[in-house]
Image (tube, rainbow, N blue to C red; front, side, top):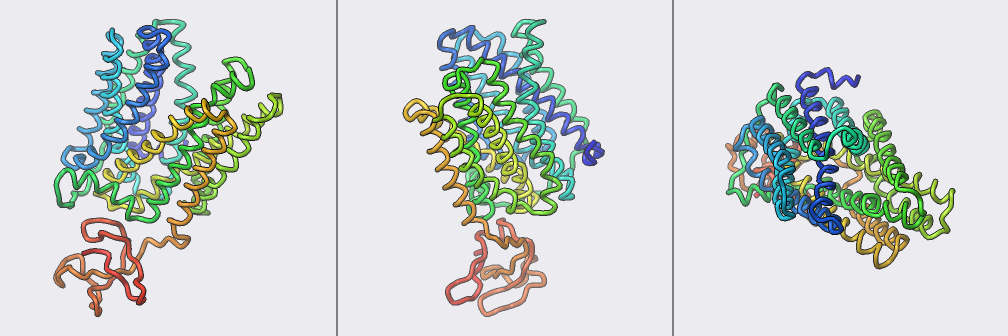
Length: 458
């Protein structure tokens, strides 16, 4: 058992995450069956629209929640969102119109967009030691990958015993169990937030934090690289397996399983690797591997279908899963290092929103390109996007990325508590500490052309 699971609070939160993920997986299968019952031949249109609604909810809701999260006790917020999701799942079997599916899906995903960033911000508070937090990030990645593999199999087994509507009951049980576990966990009290401004200003703070912090700007570019590669896996695998290779439907699971296996094996190896190499040294090479793999995918999908090209595709999907895991898993460490503790909910909410914005761009692009340019052309174009994103990340993220930075304050009064220990200079008060964007530091320190330090705050 990983040592981090000996922490009682984290063990309960992790279990809550797992059961909620299983419930979500069951809901995905049940929703597909419900869409087919209601729309028959148009079921794909219904599901496609539902997925679009999901992404819009993720992109739009998360920043607002990040702005308001400090006004609601963390436990109450998490439990209320679990119970909201349980209520929506319980209502889905009674749907009789397609528009009702859209409404309930929006409510379900809005609750998820509220729950997930708040949950992510809680984990570093529960596990302040970096080694423990790194293990938690790897376990979270494993949980997501196992859910994508396990939930469809569980749903298939349950459908041999019960009707599809009972899957929604399983989803409800999962969310209620998650809420119960969160209630039983002793959550730390979040630090008070001192940001000034209204709800709109606070909602934009997370996005401004990402834009103003070089390593977070790089992380956003890395999210785009992952979305470009991941989109071809999640959107085009069925076309590749059954359309290009002419293989049976069961091999679709084999291809997606290869992706999941690559991701899980990497997640298991990352805690030890990150102790040796660090975040930047792991994330950037993984991102640069993605366009190379997509170039190989273009070659394999342009070749005559055969055993070796099929094996090559499976290897490519495993490699994409490994590279995506190496980029995504350390992301929580980067955010944690780049935001003050009170601002973690806003930071995770911004990352949740912005990263899903990348997927909202690449998902339809992968579908349109496959129809217009074919699979080889799709892989080439998405590979070019991944390469551009990786290059942007390498430029934005300094090679020597120090957290302790010297900087000037020009407009704070000399008796301000933040200036304790600061040195007076010709242009203001100079000191150094762990630097993050917050109410006292509005920009990243830089050197002017004259060589003197420029103030990081007004």
